Image (cartoon, rainbow, N blue to C red; front, side, top):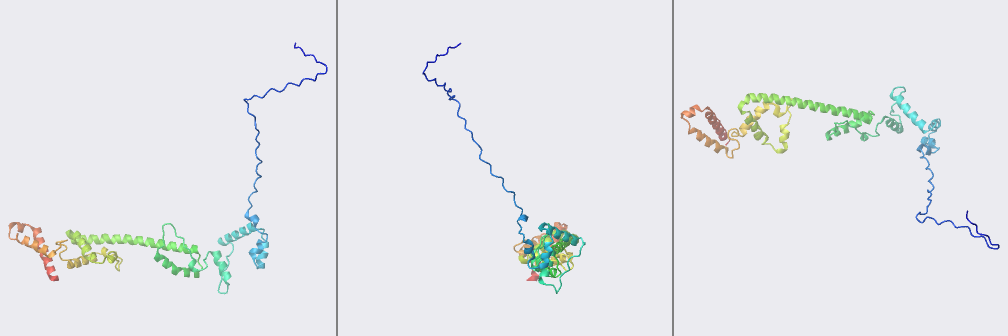
Length: 310
């Protein structure tokens, strides 16, 4: 048992023992409080809630009848519902659409009627929407520029004009496709006839046509002539009669073309070859060489034709 020190009379009491020092290795604790949160944002206001109370008067203007009618409508949403319900009933025939204005109607009546029907205010304001794969060319637009005034006079909407235009363009494409098929049939028919007639001279005559007929034309009209269409619907070069006639013209224009093609001096080339063949005449080989005899005859004919031109 521990001893207690005696208390001396008149001596002040001893101070209580001090708290032990804090552990120097433990850092002081700092308490951080979060900043106060922002108040919640007000919910967005619908534009309908911002419509002024006098919207009926603004829409009616000075028309008292309209104002009285609008006063019976509960609000803008109800007005919109009434409009679409009325349009649906008109579309389905449940109620009769407004009568078309006449010569006694005011400009305002016409504006209202055309607006409701999707009819532009003027013929120049028509907009045509083309379906995929159909394109308006410059010539097509020129045609429509003459159609629009008639469509406007008939009070056709842009949608109706678009439907008619697409039908027209689709019909043109189908017609063009049929024409291409028909031209290919004409080409095969003509090719078969001239092949049978020309036999071994088929390629020669075609080259002669291209060089002497087409080649003699100015380049600006060459392609136009090659694709020109006759009165019966055939292209010029798909007509067997025209191919035969043009071959005859080509031979007269250039008598040496089929005999000595690409010769710089046709007469000299023909004369020299005739001389070479004549040296073989009278020999056994000559009488047995039919191709050489045919060649000699062709050369002589070409020489005579060239002389006839001089």
